[in-house]
Length: 265
Image (cartoon, rainbow, N blue to C red; front, side, top):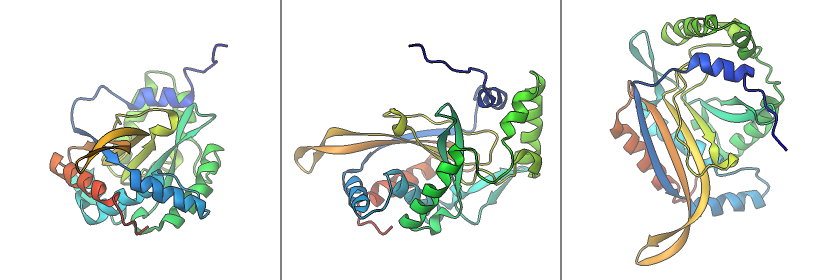
């Protein structure tokens, strides 16, 4: 049976207006993480009734690492100046409309949350996002998709310039300079990808987009022994205007140490 789909849905039309051929301002990095101990920790918490996946502690590790180790990542560019954020707000990507389009759930001040608080927030907000019932402004993609091409592209460019470059809030479109927070986190492993290479979202002020891949068993050398370990790929795209490769190295080294435990979440 041939799968039926609508190639020109609202999000695809909006994405085509937003994205351009990338030419600069990007750093890409991927790290393989040994999550054997972290996965065991998650399984134990699930037995205790906490509804979490590996995504939950990884979001907290990233938020705390940015706040405490790499505050440069908690910044954005406005009118040519680097602006520091007070908290690490995280946009978590979720599949909506039967998995055919993307939406986000905002996790404000993620660095201050406990694992239980994050689990409760996502358990409450993700189903609402999938139903399109977030209690926020109407979906701006409907407006964008209704505009004929090429005016659609010009409209998105103007909205981006006002909101992102000039720092002007556009409540009618649900756009503010802070709308998407510090970084975007996507769990591509949930849709079957072992490794995913992210793209910076140009219609936002996020400094980083993170893609979490699938967890697979691999033979690894631990001490002098070859043993099976549970490995996960974490890939990042970062805004080169606010950070350099050295900052990426600090962030990934922090994550590698954090996932070894003990876990204070």
